[in-house]
Image 1: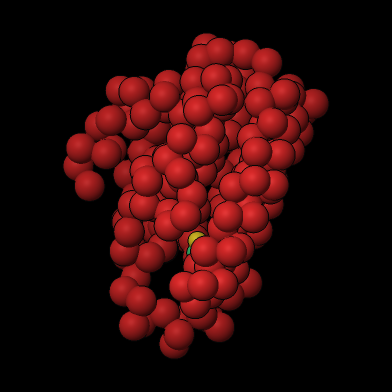
Image 2: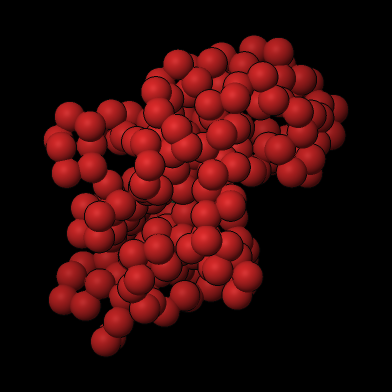
Length: 202
Ligand SMILES: N[C@@H](CCC(=O)N[C@@H](CS)C(=O)NCC(=O)O)C(=O)O
């Protein structure tokens, strides 16, 4: 291996896409390894924790868990705060996004009727509570930490984009409309030139 490899499923979404974006914004040339779903079961136990993404860096063991990957890239390439308290605050928000995914992911596997009930409950309960907590922890603009884009912003962007695309059944695309700071971060990332240049090539 002579350059970093980022291994994820063959889709521009979620934990994998936020890591690809971080590598791209960091200016790192990397091998974008995309795994077809059919190949995954045989690979699963070969990964550190049984999930993707995995980042392979020359001379190191494979690294898993999206937040660990993002923080490493961010620290090395100016996309994560140097101040340790501010860094921890960013990591808290990144964990907040992971908790959202952990709550919503099980509904992906439900049958139609159960999925509808579970998602409607999320719309009235968990999702607004999640967004309110995100909103009260965003103190700057346009990005979470102020003027510069950082890895936490990529994570917030991917989470918001997932829901407002209108493709998550039973969850209205307007779900985060009432949260201007959260939406502001999402829009600032969407419109960032480096992000657009990645999106344009995939
Ligand atoms: N905590 C891990 C979660 C990894 C994870 O669950 N990834 C999903 C894709 S986003 C996955 O690998 N799903 C397939 C599986 O669990 O078998 C992270 O942040 O990367």
